[in-house]
Length: 164
Image 1: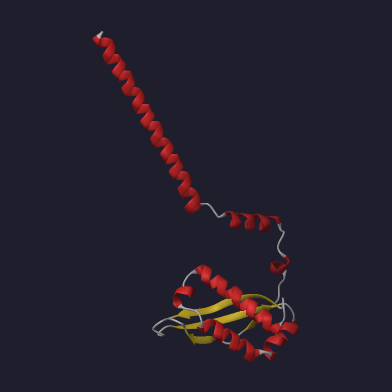
Image 2 (image 1 turned 60 degrees about the vertical axis):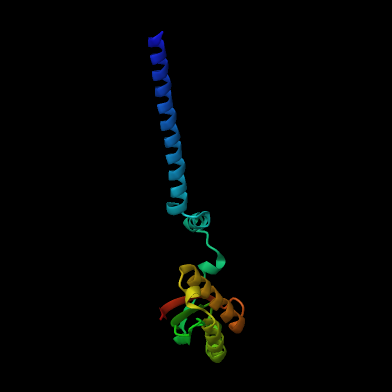
C-alpha cells in the first residue's frame, strides 16, 4: 500500500512538472509574439505602402516629378520659454511646372513671411522628433500651396536643419 502511495505522488509530481513547463512555454510564446509585433514587425500602414510600391502602383502625386527650387535659408528664434534656442532651416521645393516656379519668385516676400511666422511658432520639443519634421514638411507644402496655387508644390525637402 505504501508503494502505491509513493508511485501516486511521483506520478502527480511528474504531471505537475509538465504543466509548469507548458505554462512557461506558452508565456514565452506570447511574450515573443508581443515583442516581435512591437519592435521588429513593420506597422500595417508601412506594409500596405510597401506592397503598393512593389506592385508599381503609386499615387498620382508621388509619381509626378518636378523641378527643385531652393528657398533662402531661414534663421528664426524658436518659441521656447527662455527664448534661447534658434532654428536654421534650408529648404528646397519641388514644383510641378515652370509657372509655379515663376510664382515662387513672384511671391517671395509672402513666402518668407509665412514661413518665418510658421517656424518661429515652433518649439524645440515640437521639432525634435522625426514625426514632427515630417509634419513640418507637410505644413510648409500646405502653406506654399495656399500662396502659389493649389497643387503647384509637390514636395518640400529639408536640406539643412540646425537647432541650437
